[in-house]
Image 1 (cartoon, rainbow, N blue to C red):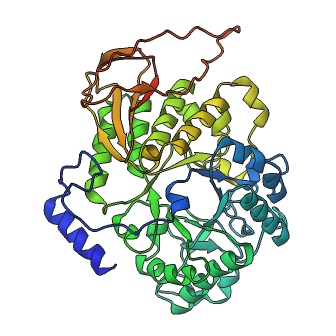
Image 2: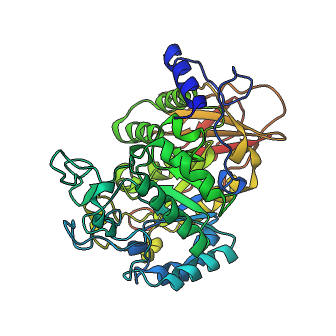
Image 3: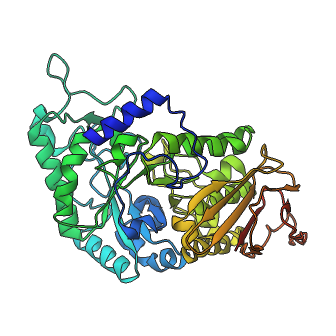
Amino acid sequence: MTTRATAWLCLAAALGLAVPAHTDSPSHPARPTAREAPTWARDGVLYEVFPRAFSPTGDLNGITARLDHVRDLGVTVLWLMPLQPVGEHNRKGTFGSPYSIRDFRAVSTEYGTPDDLRRLVREAHARGLRVILDFVANHTAWDNVLMETPEVYVRDASGKVQPPNEDWTDVAELDYSSPRLRAYMIETLQHWLREYDLDGFRCDVAGLVPTDFWEEARPELEKVTPDVFMLAEWSEPELLFEAFDADYAWPFHATLSRVLGLGAPASEIRATWEEQRARFPEGALHVRFSDNHDERRAITRFGEPAALAASALVLTLDGIPLLYNGVEIGDPTESGDPALMERRPVFWAGAERRPWFLPYYKAMIALRRAHDALRRGETVWLRNSGEDRVVSYLRRGRDEEILVTVNLSSQPWSGTLDVPGGAAYTEITPPIGLPVQPGGGVPERETRAVELPKLGLDAWGVRIFRR
């Protein structure tokens, strides 16, 4: 752990993590800062692709064939789940977990060839897309090439290699006290940057690997790719001081799930945001999501309108938004364990069943990309008269202010907001169609006047204003 990280964590502990935080404004008491992410990542929208499931062919060329769809959606960063060969020994399921890797430096023949990957990256870059790769540093398959050097693994007193825990029986845990392992893994990361012109990494269970390894690796990666982007699949302040540019907003995701799935008050979302701001260094970037490959689909957990409301939060709050392949068409196909070990392709033809989904995502992503306040502005939470059901906040930029209101309940809401004084707001909510009803037909949307601070929201409704 760095000296700066140690000082901050000691201070946070002394304060009991009870520092009030209503905005992410620099006017609050100074505290240590997170490392600054590359501009392209900070302003980006991430799109996660499971190569096995993304296309009918389930390979790299299948991804390349759909790059126009990805670009036209408006996302800017393509995250590829692991591409390496999957282990066979102790394999789970038919195809095995992509996180059980047999050779860290190889491209799986299941997905194609090294030249197929080079072509994918080249074509993505030509469309203005960056590409990052999933990297699994904590463990390997039991038949990984590193098994020839068992000293780089965690072993029991008898010398037997150990799994990370009782459930992860298909993988063996690596031992980062080994200088040989550290050198190998850093060289491996450099290999992927150099050989395939990748732009960064999403690092699986990053907190299970010693932070000082990541801090050792970072400058070595920057020698190859100066603006490399490093995303930690974890939520821990010390990772963002020197090693990583962003982490996962796991606490936000958990709270969102409680609100939409268990009926917790909407005000818990603000409370979680404030707790995280108090805990993390100034400028910390969190990747926000409603879906990813580990979680059940939001559309199956919460229903269609609530899933779209969740995405509205993801796409208008601070941090970096993440979409999982197929969410933009309302695809309900699961990919979490045990589906992760099988091949369950996204049903792209299902877009016809929910024709309002894709325009919604395109419009919301375009809105974010068009407004600096949504990408970089400070977040200021506003009180409203229905905080058990409604969240309201400002995204305040240099030259504009965006007001976002989201109804996280199944009932229409009318009430008031504590809107700060100033010029009048203009509504900029994207004109999204309503769902097709059973038996056909689309209901008419109720016209709701804007007389701020009075406001009305449909069930699961979203309204956005600018001044």
